[in-house]
Picture (cartoon, rainbow, N blue to C red):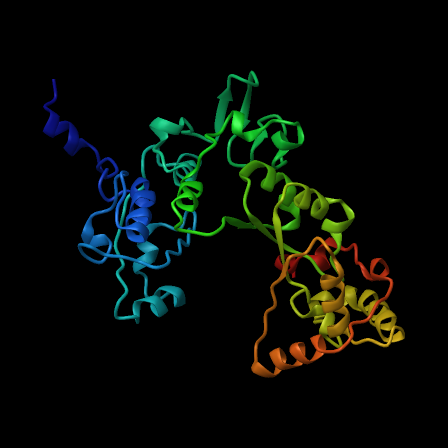
Length: 327
């Protein structure tokens, strides 16, 4: 029989560390934010030393990137981060099993796979008598769909652990609210029903009224969720005199909208702001500016009476035009 040491040497890679582990992130965040945690956490040298504290923690998760990329200073992101003298770049291991489907529920619940039970993309759920795909939250047979279990009336709290790590932090007073940012195709209302956040950020604009038309905004309000809207200028498309060449097909559509706005005695900027602010479902509108002059122009518009017009007539239906990631 091969000796244990010989068996270990036969493996090219050692098993994932239980100390320098992705599974110890929840405990590390709790420790940094509160000064203590009953969960396992990363060693002090990975957290900036003994007694390290943080007012805020931002986790940027890039799935499948690979730890070697974190040391590649040829990448602009890594080069910029590396220039900061206080930056620590350290390697940690995935937990086991080393799958996205096991690790993300661990981050969400604050529990290892041995506790939450999700170790692969496909999971047999006794209560449904069927295979489900855990991250897209759908029956395995619902190919290409997301959140189909919610649409089928399955209450997530009957399958997923009701308490979550993020909810625990809120209960401890560490954070005032829990929010998620979504796209239209994510079915924001279904996500809100599943995760029960305090706020949801969605793309919504004079040109992109899909979430209003399909009733998603109304469903979010029925769930008691605060609605934050972004992309109210659709990445500046509404404000452009002429769209870029790659969106040439949008030219006639945008021209019609701009004519309607002009006939109402308004500008594209004032119309875009007025539409979003006129919707009772919207609690917060997130604006992006590239210069102080743009911010001053927006504030000046908001000091004047905003226009009223046929907002529905300004909506576009072309998914490619309404989805900046497809530009």
